[in-house]
Image 1: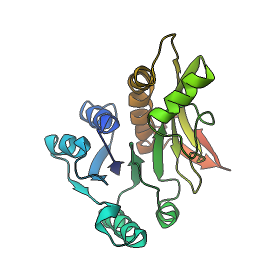
Image 2 (image 1 turned 120 degrees about the vertical axis):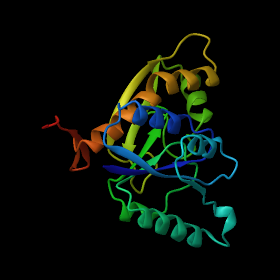
Image 3 (image 1 turned 45 degrees about the vertical axis):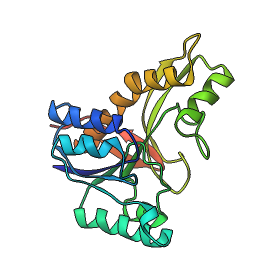
Image 4 (image 1 turned 90 degrees about the vertical axis):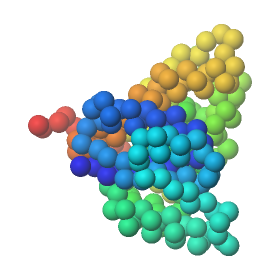
Length: 211
């Protein structure tokens, strides 16, 4: 059984997609050990409670400095003995000591086709505003492992989504969530749970299931 912790900051739509796919069996052999938010008012915490999933708020605002927050966050995850950390709209910089402790065991969803529209400053609607300003015809989403850079970790899955004439950032954001994010994040978790994902020389290799 793959034990995962899902880290969130806001509405938790990707969290809901993960919960739904676990409940319907699309994501196999996986349980959510904890949902953690840095925002006590995040709707994601309500989603967790509705499905009887343990959840808590760990916010940098509740600590006198970032080092203490980083330590509590890492200690909490280590105590949970999770196999995988899933960043589902977590708007906090991941501490380097957490990346070291969970090397190739932290995944993130980014709302573009990396390496386009990614890196520092590219989050939320900013990503879609930049894509529309550039006039791209195709955007999408990427699931990747987290390393010390910003959106630079090994890519696991990507899915393209058409950009349509008249799209606003909000409309494009919603289409990418529905057509890409909510599909490839659950798929990535299922592949990891099945032992099909390997990182070799900084690149992801997806192997066929043996069973």
